[in-house]
Amino acid sequence: MTDRVIPARVNIAREALEAPLKAGLGNKVAFVSVRGQLTYAELDAQSGAFAAACRKRGIGRGDRVLLRTWNCIEFAVAFLGLAKLGAVPVMQNSAAAMADVQYVLEHSDAVAAVALNELAEPLRALSALLPRGLIVARGALPGEGVYEDMVRGDTVEIEDTAADEPALMCYTSGTTGRPKGIVHAHRWIIGRGDANRLRLPPEPNDIALAAGEWSFISLLGHNVLFALRNGITGAVLEERASPEKLLESIARFRVTVAYAVPTMYRRTLAIDGIEKNYDLSSLRACNASGEALGAAPLAAWKARFGTDIYEHYGISEYQMVLGQSPLLQLKPGSVGVPWDIVAEVVNDQLKPVPQGEVGQLVFGIDNPSLFLGYHKDPEKTAAVVHDGWFHTGDLARKDEDGYFWIAGRGDDCFKSRGIFIVPIEIENALLENSSVAEACVVPVASATDGNLIRAVVVMRSPLTPRDAVEGGYAEKLKTGLKARIARNKVPQIFDFVDVLPKSANGKVLRRELIARASAH
Image (tube, rainbow, N blue to C red; front, side, top):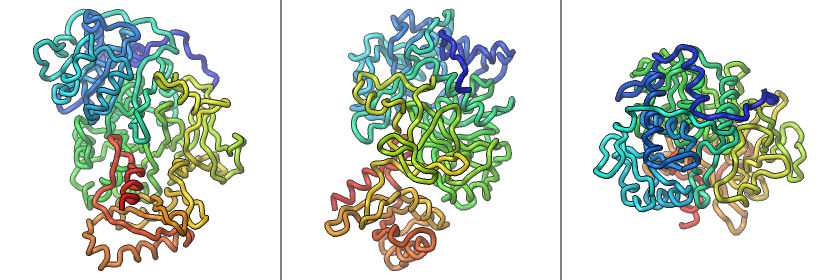
């Protein structure tokens, strides 16, 4: 697949819809939600009408338009309509606060925005930044574009965009600074769509569901664009996901393939017997990405829910690049093998390290799904794309079968008493204890030891501080760890909390835990 030729002219909307429609799937359900459903033919017509209405508002090829919705059919229609125009949808998590919304509007050069009424207030307050106006679904105010009117009427011809022309923008969470605007080209849907299709071959009756926002590019691909391109149905989980909403949606829509961050699987496993409350017999595969899952949650999920979780590794600048697959032997704890991409583990001189050793994870840049760059930031782009590699900033090792094992972010690892500490190793060992729901390991600065090792733990049964001390839980966890990892890697400090701080995409905010420790 790596030697395939990408056509010179590609439009992401045409690529998503043309094949299913030509295959006679016009009457097949493209999206289903608690609010109704839309067939492929209706999706094509509504997105075309939306494109025509946007053109009348002065929105055209190359214009950036911010989407502020949670997962909903309106998002899919607006995204595809803008793509048909050659405009560039700009995605941001719907939980973003006013300051972040303003930053993204200004930084992306957005000329307009599309929002659900429930989420529109920040954009209404910033309307002076939107020369082509605000389009609102489910309750537009006077002077705003009425989404429901814009999806009826004449359509437009799809713009003949170049394969390497900007097609979409997504923003990083900004946990280490201002969010970065990641620009992808139209060719991306072929580059990563082919790889995802190969990793988990679709079946005609598949129904895919993502428990997370489509502003997260992994879920945009799996639940929306790749699902459409494969001619299957996307189930829509609106608003914020929870274990109950995830399982209820799987049962309601007869979902066959689910996608979620590891945190969602761990939260679900922390509820005893929850699987008995829902009919999950339709489910054939689950997938996890965003952070390390670990072998223990995978085994527990298989035992209780009867399906495997195929972990995969992706980055917003590419999307899924490494992955487990039903076509391969499942190695719990690994993120699998490369799919249609060159991957390597290298040292500081960019030379491959010996098999089994930890080094820097890099990917080849000769791939059509590589991003075009960070918007307005050539320096940061050059910092990660150089010497023929995309530098992820993650550490990893590769085993004898070519499977990759993530060791964590390079800046998450630290030394304690002269020993190199890889937090994921300790966290996975903690998760092998059935009493532990979640765990995060971070350093605590020490004048004598460089750093002490601190484990922040969420137990399946919540503990009060008194319970933790009197019950000797820290000592019990230490004893268990000594049987699993080297004794000099066992944390000296254990803190028990009800929840770990997380980003809008469900990733644990390690730096927030480090900052909290430093403040005390």
